[in-house]
Length: 573
Image 1: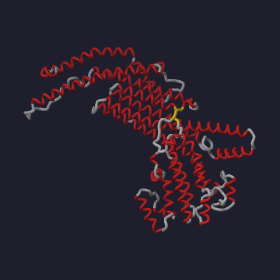
Image 2: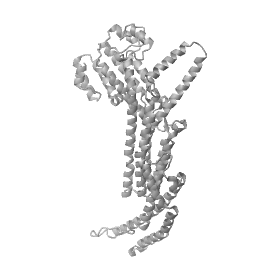
Image 3: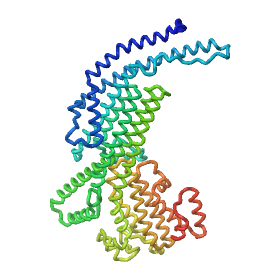
Image 4: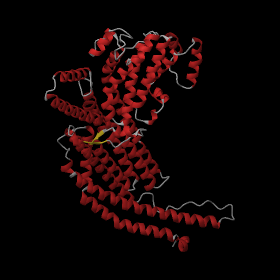
């Protein structure tokens, strides 16, 4: 038709005839579908119930009238599948018609350009408007799409609300699943010994979000997809984020407080030591085996509680990961399912990109939960440093009889030649330095206590959370050590001992991190500035001549491995 009748606009007339005939046939069917499914009435109820969910005015034992006015979750989900398929068929037809119009205009432009190729004054071809940009069928699809997306949003919020109500099962082991994110750890053994968990809530809510948005994107209608992408971002960033933050703080961080909570504190440590000593004094009776069994069961229950508390912190990190995956899935859907370079498609891309701000909010919430956890652990960390170093206010804090005997017998920093532990002392002569090599230094004791405190967290926290927490703990420890070290006298041999201790501390820090990002000492000191300052302090103290200090500092500054101000270094030296 285009080839033979284009001069008489026969091709344009055929397209208009076909489209008018299709519209006259399809529009009554669409109106009948709206009446049968009562989309207008259901949309109004869905909008009202969604506002109740959004404002947090729906009680845990209620669904806000969702079942009464809209239907059960499975029935509404099936209805949304049907509506999405109807919109998809109509959008496919409208795209086909638009493609046909574009092809006719392209053929006309080709003939126009060919006929005027020898005449430079031929005016440029202006595409014909074969069909208006918005027809009655376009308007009907947009109307049904608007009704569909409001109900889809309400379905998403109702599914999330049902998942929140299931929070009453938070102590049930069945409420938890193995963590779905992994770190690129260089040690397979390290990953194999870890058993981090996440809760069912995170799976349920993100499944609802993914299903709703993916279904809206499958319609191919940019307006419907854009609206659902915005509704999904809103649902994740408001109610869902607050639920995750509340659970992480109240049921995660609060239960992990050392001593008062699940982590080992001074009271737990002392009681454990006392029970072990008591068990030895009971002789060889039959009760020791039963006591060991009970102790093992208590330890297993405690580990299970720690794993569950950590899972609530892990949920926030999993939300970061799942939001990134959702963005990637939707971006791929845009590339594969929507016309490129159109205004609607670009607008849809912007809607999907808004999920990046939601991801940033989840990241901030994860960082905040780790900061809270590190904050409640600070008193215990400081007491560990004080006990290991041997400050005055901690001289009798949790000191074993062996250590007391060692401290009373003289020797290095209070530790005798036969002792097992020596406190921090770098004012060493040659004899004291040689004796120090035969004893367990304070750094070994400090490392052992820190590992005892954090080992359950390393086992059950998500890799990114654990790395952030461990770096914060090392930073707190390093700051405390630096304060004490500034009051300490050093000899040249003491400086060597200090350098060895800092190397051990650096090795401990690096070995307990999970990400390959921290495989080098430079990466560790860059992430943990207080530890880097201690390493730089050791370098300062081991410079042979004072005149060489400026050269060493300048060299390290050029490499980006120096954090001390020159005045601080001069004052310290």
